[in-house]
Length: 170
Image (cartoon, rainbow, N blue to C red; front, side, top):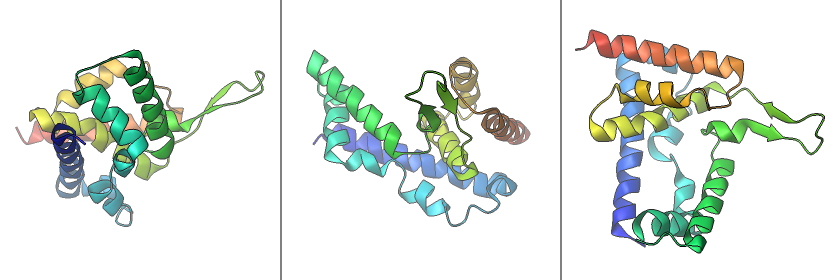
């Protein structure tokens, strides 16, 4: 266990919480109906990273000073586990069928998971105290993301409302 990784996790979770609380204060209409889910976002975000099969691999990859084949492989497996355990990641919602005729299906994300995903992305902007950095990040990554059309519309609507509110408060 590494103090550095523990500190990173604490900061990340705190910044996710800060993002959610910003919504509560500045755009409460975005969170309508979310009260039962707010505890998950504010206090239990990424709790699977405490599981040994995720924790050890992340710690070794980011803070171990060694990117050997084994460290990279273990990290990739841990990342895959994390994605499959946490439906706030868009990758969780991609169904890869056995039948090549069916191929890949991108499922619509539930609204509460979209909110947590945005708070997760935004946490890195909070870390740098540059709250508008999320918009640049999304512009750079959105074409790669496989989002259901309705999910994409919802994500972009929320990001637009965030940008408007941040512009108002400057």
